[in-house]
Image 1: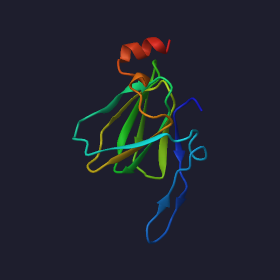
Image 2: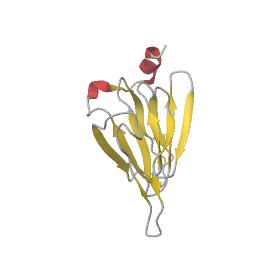
Image 3: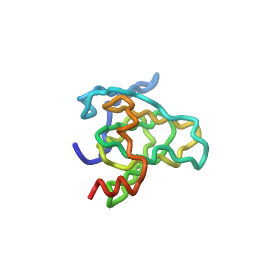
Image 4: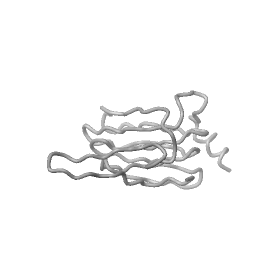
Length: 132
């Protein structure tokens, strides 16, 4: 997979509460090396605003809603996440920002690599030059 895509996760409905899960290399196309979550984002703030050279991610709105804005160097793609039973696959070399967080939203991000600062591209013009 080299295009962003919404992936629906398994969903088990139960009157006591629903259940969904993620299995690496089953629901998502990579092995999970790192998991982190973003929460308590003040109104109007934007998270991310960077790209990864080779890292892939899967983003899920565990609670609330937010937008994931991706740019491939030529075109912007916007995804609204608001259900915990689907998430967004983000391939390498997409500029990613997260915005419009609702109150009490929680974004969970699964990544295929551990944190490495040299994996990040933090300047949009540099990113665009690498996508030509």
